[in-house]
Amino acid sequence: MPYVHPTVLVVDDNEDTRIAVTMFFRAAGYGVETARDGREGLSVMRQTHPCIVLLDLQMPDMSGRDFRHEQLADAELKDIPVVVFSASGDIKQAAERMAVSAIAQKPIQLYRLMALVNEHCLK
Image (cartoon, rainbow, N blue to C red; front, side, top):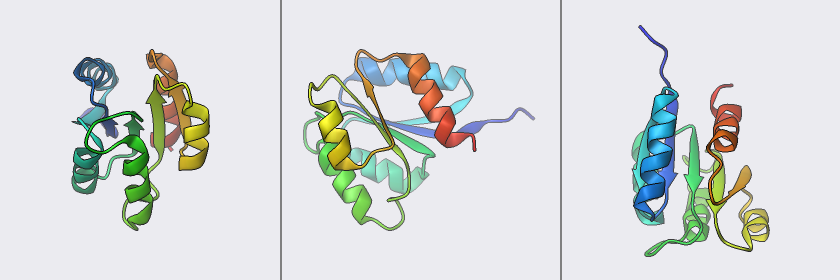
């Protein structure tokens, strides 16, 4: 039976981004769940307990910042690492305030994202 990597959660309001990242990580053997905004992301996170979250900052309904705030307040979810990936110009400052594991600037460099995911999920 082949080894299946843990699950990655992709939270981004851009459908093309979700599709591209999903295809890339599934091809590498990861399970992938997706969400269109922070609120949906928290719901999926509670159901799947992914090994890592790839989180956009700017989304409707619930932003990445609000997602992270709620995640950190939840004892069951607070230790799941988060990588912020965004086109936002203040990504570094936002990431520092949010206490995330890493950042990745958009446009996404998929192999850099893979290295970050592998670092957290293949321990």
